[in-house]
Structures are given as C-alpha cells and as structure tokens.
Image (cartoon, rainbow, N blue to C red; front, side, top):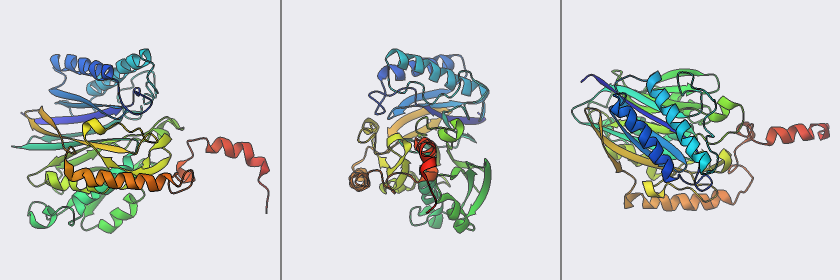
Length: 364
C-alpha cells in the first residue's frame, strides 16, 4: 500500500472554562471538517480529541510530512473552531494562531506538529502522547529513558533487534540548528544537551537503519511571537514493538512525574501528571501539567482505537506523587524553582518592570 503518513497537529483555539477544558462544540466542528476532507480523499483516517484546552487532530494520509494540503486542512479547521470559540466567548479564542493567513505550513504559525512517514508493518502499534500546561522540553526525559536507558527499556539488552541502540535528533530552538547523537556511544554528550530542556529538544528518534521510531513537536510560541502568547503544549508519536520498545517500556517513564516548565501562565515548574482522557482538565493553578496517551493499531492507514493507556490503576501512585510534588512546589510561590528563571521569564511582564525601574538601579 506504500508509505503512510501519521500527522498530529494541535492548537489552543479557546478554553472552557478558562484554560481548563474544551467545549464539545469545538470537537464537533473539527470532526466535521476532517470528515469532509476524508470523504474527498485527502485523509485516509482521522481522530479528534483534546487534552485540557488543546484541540488535537490525529490524521493518516499518503501525502508525506509537511504536506501543504494537510497543513492547510489543519489550519482551516483551527480557524473554523476559533470562530465557534469566539461565538461562545471561550477564553483565549485562537491564541495559538499567530497569523491571519495560511502560508503553506502550520510550522512557525503557532500550532504544534509531530509527523512521521513509514511503511506500515504487519502489526503497527503507535502511541500518541498529548500534554497540556507544559512545553516541548517535557518529552526529553521520557524519550531518553524509552530509547536509551536499559533500566527502563529491557529490550535494549535482551532484544537483538534493539541492542545496537538508537539515533536521536536534537534541535537547538534558539539557534535553529540540529544535531544527531548515536546511543549508547554518545549517551553522555546527548545528556549534556537535552538536560537543558528549555533550549535543546529531542525532535525525533530513529533506528540505526534510518527507520523512524518517534517524532515530537518542538514549537515554542514565545520564540515565534517574541512575547508570551500561551503555552506550548506538545504532542509526540512513538511507534512500538517488533524491534522497537514495547508498549510497557514506552509508558514506564511516566510513572515518574518529573518536573516540567509551564503550569500557570507558562511561567512555573510542576510535575507532569499522567491521566486518563476524562481527567485531562487542569484546574489547580491551571494545572498541574497533564499528559494523556492514546494507543492505536494502524490497519492500512485506518486508526484502530484509541485506547486510553493511562486509564490504569498502576498509574495511581504517579498521580498521587504528582499531587504531593504540586503541594511542595506551590509553597514556593513566586520564588524559584517553582517560578521559572529570568532567562525563561523574558516573555512575561519582567522586561516592562525592568524598563520602568532601570533609572533606580545605582552602583553599590
């Protein structure tokens, strides 16, 4: 059947209530747009969902990554949903749409994008992660553990097809440059960079033979717009099984609710809480940050699913721990490490305060 492309595109088109969730009319509008595109042959299949106040478009097609037609469909869908959000006076309607006109790709226009093209295997298992109230750097630690940490992924040791390791594509979002690291050979070099989650982000992971294993969104709205315009709320696709990590190995890193950037006004650190679909409604201090996992089997491009992968009591302790961490971090109030450092606060009110007070700073 040839290669299939899996595209996941997200945007915040309006929150209900505040930034906590999404109105059902938004979901229905998106479904209508994508169903029309499927009927016209543009899409093979699709699924519409949401995480918090973010609309998630999951699409399969045969037009390859960066398809102008598919990206235009996503953009027009977000625009139509924004109109509905405005009619309902939803909060922050269209805040992720940074332009009034489509320019050929949604990249650089606000929405987050993760895509991959591949030959569908005899059994093609994929898991799509969607997060709210955090930034793309949130995927660094889980991706490292999934594809490079043998204490997490037993297959790196006992599966001959994985024993050679994986190749990581890392993006410097400030300099707009990328670099490849082979693991386990360059594990220490990789960690030196991806530990700085605000600047260096894992964009993709490949098998050593070049077959893609994972793709993550790396768009940072503040770097695009030059000011605070909302949270980045990333998405990620991971292929599983048959020479790739097992489903259980892919989910395991999320039993640790690691600290991520985001939460209230995108200016705080908090624990990433793995939740079931119905629990993806961050409301405490607009958080804490949430992540959901939708599991699919692909069958000739058809999306068989989703299965709610975090709707499992074995993640209850992670959720409990996340709440304890949230309590601890909140007690810091406006102090670091709960509030982000000044280098990450440059898109908030801090520059205006500094300008207002610059004449009052005198030499000691």
